[in-house]
Image (cartoon, rainbow over all chains, first blue to last red; front, side, top):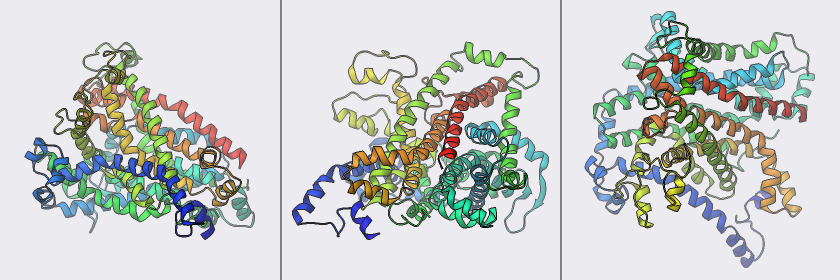
Amino acid sequence: MAMTDDVERPTLAAAPGSPRQRRRLRLERLPLHVAVIGLALLWSIPTIALVVSSFRTPEEIAGSGWWNAIKTPFDWTFANYDAVLSQRGLARAFLNSIIITVPASAITILVAAFAAYAFAWMRFPGRNLLLLVLVGLLVVPVQMTLIPVLRLYVALSVDVEIPLLGGKLFGTSSYPGIWLAHGAFGLPFAVYLLRNFFGGLPRDLIEAALLDGASDMQVFFRIVLPLSVPALAALAIFDFLWTWNDLLVALVFLGDPNLAPMTLRIANLVSSFGASYQVLTAAAFVSMAVPLVVFFALQRYFVQGILAGSVKG
Amino acid sequence: MVGRRWWVPWLWLAPALILVGVFLLYPSIDTFRRSLLDERSQDFVGLDNYRFIIENPQPLVSNTHVALWNNFLWLFVFTALTVPFGLVLAVLTGRVRYEALAKSAIFIPMAISFVAAAVIWRFMYEFNADIGTANAVTTQLGGEPTAWLQDKHSPLSFITDSGPDTLPGPLQLNNFALIIVGTWMWTGFAMVVLSAGLKGISREILEAARVDGGNEWQIFWRIIIPILSPTIVVVATTLVIQALKKFDLVWVMTGGRFDTDVVATLFFKEAFVIRDFGVGAALAVVLLMWVVPVMVISIRRFEFQEEIR
C-alpha cells in the first residue's frame, strides 16, 4: 500500500528525487490545487452567507450584504440562535427526528438490499420488467401519493398508544406509519443504486460460494454486503438526509404535535415569526448538525486511499 | 446460475414489492384513473384533461406549455452541469491531502434543507447590489444589476447585448438562475456516489497505466471513465429523474411565477390550489411517461452488465 500511495500522491513525504524535482512536481500540481480550492470556495459562498446571516439582526440582513458582517465580527448577535434553541419542545422535536429517521432509513436500506440481491443474482420470469417498474416509480412525485395513502391510513388506523415511544400503533400520527411511508419512498433509488453495485461484483466469487454449498443468506451477509460498504455508506447518507430534511410527509402524516420532527417545528417557528429569515438561517444550521455528523462519520468510506484494497475482495 | 426453488427470488423481493406497491404503485394507478375523470374525480371525461395540456387554453392561470418546456430545459441543463461537476470533483479531490475538507464543502449544500437553501439563494439573487451577492459581483465587474429570478430574457442577450428574447421559450435567465441553485445542491450527490464507485477501481490498474507511461488525461478518459461508466449512468439517471420531478426549489423560490413553472409545480397548483384534480393527475401521468425511455435505456445497460461479467 505504501508504494501505491507514492504513485497516487507524489507530494507526500516519500516523494522521490532532489528538492528541485520535488519543486517541479509541486508546480505541476498547482492547477489541481487551484481547481479544487476554487470550486470548494465557489460552492461554499452561499453556505458562508447562510452562516454569517444567522448571526445578524433582521435590520442588518435587510440593510447590507452579508460580507459587510465579516468586517465587524464583534457586532454579531446570538439572538437568532436564542430564538431557535429556546423554543419549547425543541428537544422533543430533535428526538422525534431521530426516532423517525433512523428506522425509516434502516427499512429502506435493508429491504432494498434484499431486492437488489435478487435482481442482480437470481433468475426469475419478468425480472427486467419488474425492475423497470420499480425503478421507474422513482419519478413519482411524493405529492401525488399523499391523498391515496392518507385515505388508506385513516382506514387502517390502529388507535392503540405505543408505550414509551408515544403515538398510535398505526395510521396517521403514528411512528410505524411514517417509517413505512419514508421507507417506501426511498426504495426505488436504493434498489437502483444497490442493484448496480451488486451487479458489478465478481461473478466467480459469488457462484463459487453458492456451489460450495453456501446459502443465499450466507452469500448476502458475508460476501455481498461487506463488499458493497462504500455504496451502502453513500446510500445511508442520502437516505438519512432526505428523510431528515423532509417536511411534506411529516406535515401530512403526523397530526399529533408531540410527534413533530425538527423540520415541522422550524416551519411553524418561521410562520409564527412572520417572514423571519434570520431565524430560519439559524434554524437551518441547528437542523444541519446531525446530517453533517452522519456525513463525517461515513465519509471515510468514500475518501480515497483509506479502505482501498480491502473492498475489492 | 445455481438452481433455486421458484419462489425463493419472490421471498427476497416481497418486502420491497409490498412497500412499493402500497405507497407508490397504488397511488400511481389511482392518479391515472383520476386523470380520466373530471375535476372532482366523479364523471368520466375521457382524454379531456390531456387535451387541456396539449391545447393550453388558460395560459395565464396555468401555462402547460411553459411547464413542459421548462422541464425539458431542466432535464438537459441540470444533468449536463451536475454530472461533469460531480465527476471532476470526485476525481480531483481524491488527489489532494485536504480531500475530506474539500468534499465537505461540496457536500454541505445537500445537508441544508431546501427551504433554507431557497432563502439564502433569494439573498444571493437580490436585486439590490448592496445586499445581493450576484449583483454585487456583477456591478463590480461593470454590469447592471439584474433581477435574476424575474428576468425572462435569454441569458445570451444578457451577455452579448444583442437584444432581449433572441432565443425561444424556456431559455430564460430566471430558469438558468434556478437550475444553478439545483446544481449547487446536487453536485455533492453526484460527487459522493461517484467517489464510492471510484473506490472500486483497483489501484494496480491505475499504477500499471502510469508505469506504462500514460498521462493523467489518458488515464482519466481511457481507464477511469470506462470503469466508472455504470455508476455514471446511475447518477445521470437519478439526476434526470430529479430534474423531472423538481418541485421544492421552484415552489419556494419563485412559486412558478415569471414563467418558471415546471410540471410538478403546475401539478401541485392544479390539484391543490385550483382544485382541478383531473388536470393535475393528467400532468402527473405525463411526468411518469417521460421517464419510460430513460428507464428502458438503463435496464438495457443492466442486461449488458450481465453479459460481460
